[in-house]
Length: 115
Length: 118
Image (cartoon, rainbow over all chains, first blue to last red; front, side, top):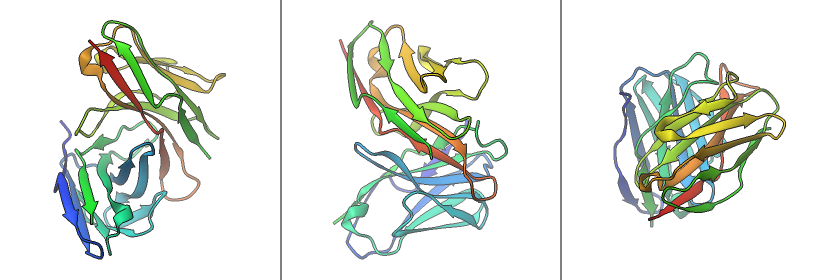
């Protein structure tokens, strides 16, 4: 089974802190994604990566950056956390190729609270 | 541009009765469509997907969905609800982006919370 793990289930940080969210997948998937999930808004794509060191902005990249140094690991970075970044963050991965038909596999999520 | 509208934010059914979760989409191209489920404190799990083959798609746990191009709909159904079906359900549309190497756009609906009454 595909497994996507996220480094923390719950995280509390202070305003202005630099925050790292880590995601690891064990199925050699080319594509990896970071979403945030907010009540009533569904999931919104922050960034995604289709190869090591490659990244592309999603719909809401402002205030975030990402790093993909190894194929299995995709990090989301909040350079200076703000209270409006309090949210659930979900990581996902998928194989490359015919991306239109490939499902994404999700991690359990990290609930981040910024105070 | 593509979009997804889940017509109900919350649906409540009695155990053993049918489930209908409604989804309408708009897309410039021929999309792929998915339904995902999220149980409390869990990640999302794929229920089923439509990829331009059969218009009636069967998924896990007895769920199915029918792609109707004329109505731009992809409603999720199940003949008989079970307590374990209580969760949040997301309708998702996928199509190729105009930019980026091999990139595509995945758009999620806002979700429908399904409650099942004993």
